[in-house]
Length: 154
Image 1 (tube, one colour):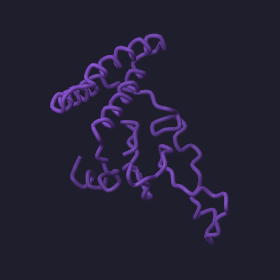
Image 2 (cartoon, one colour):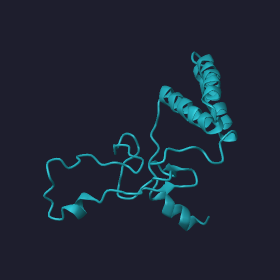
Image 3 (tube, rainbow, N blue to C red):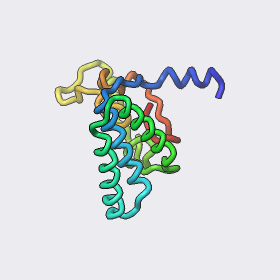
């Protein structure tokens, strides 16, 4: 990729929020479970492997700061090595078969005079149906970069 293409993509990327250690571990655990669900077909196997995964996370629960940083780094590397080539995604999320199939038209198109009905939605939603908030880092600003190869919204 050349520099012009990268700079065009950077204009639409969302900012990365600063997370606490607890939130970082929680996200890692959730992503690990999703990755495990992509690899396992049978629910019983998934439950057995999820118990083992939970035991691994609980083993590092009371680690000191330096060990926690090392464990997080190793876990992220392990997740990267074990990533699924075609991960499962919910059909209405980015990369799913129903994503943006019937997107709602903008309110400005439906009501060009600006007289919105009282039951019109008061919040904006991102393409992944999360509520737009500045503090989450997923703030809808008109255009969002959806990477279909990674099946996520950036």
